[in-house]
Image 1 (spheres, rainbow, N blue to C red):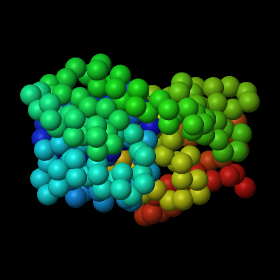
Image 2 (cartoon, helix red, strand yellow; image 1 turned 30 degrees about the vertical axis):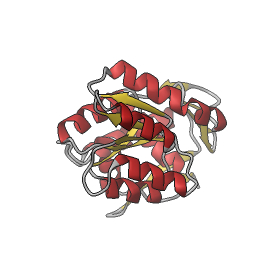
Image 3 (spheres, helix red, strand yellow; image 1 turned 90 degrees about the vertical axis):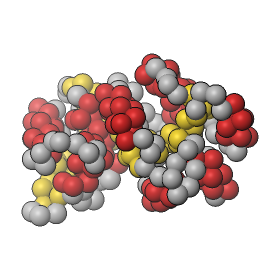
Length: 224
């Protein structure tokens, strides 16, 4: 499941991103309202988390513009503890829920699950290509003969590949989408995880493969 996080406090953004990544969410983090609008317009998300107080454009304005455009994306707003009016305005503007700072990780995860539940019910929890299936609820990669439960980064990488079959995804895109813009990880970590997935696909007898295109990236293709 892919989320957009718009939070201008860098330390808090990193904490939230780490919590979500640990729980198998793919997160794109931005730090102002204008960037949030741009990313929401350019990408498909399962939900968004918007801080109300952000530079360039506040969270309520972002929310109103998203709803004015007919987008029913599940949106959680983050508010200051004492700002009751912000909560009311946010809900009236179309937010699905709100969370006051500071908050516990368990509550954040519970509220995300609650607001995305209806959308998740509408979308299939399984992604398929060839004889391979990825279950987004159990994180299992399977074929008719066997299955593996993927680790967090493996799952996010396979989900991204299956969501974009036969399309090149650059190493930089993998780094940004899965490890985050502020990660200290070396770029060759992408190759390492591609290697892990290739071994699992081979063990499953997959009729699809992760193809590398020199100086361009990786794509999920049918085997010839």
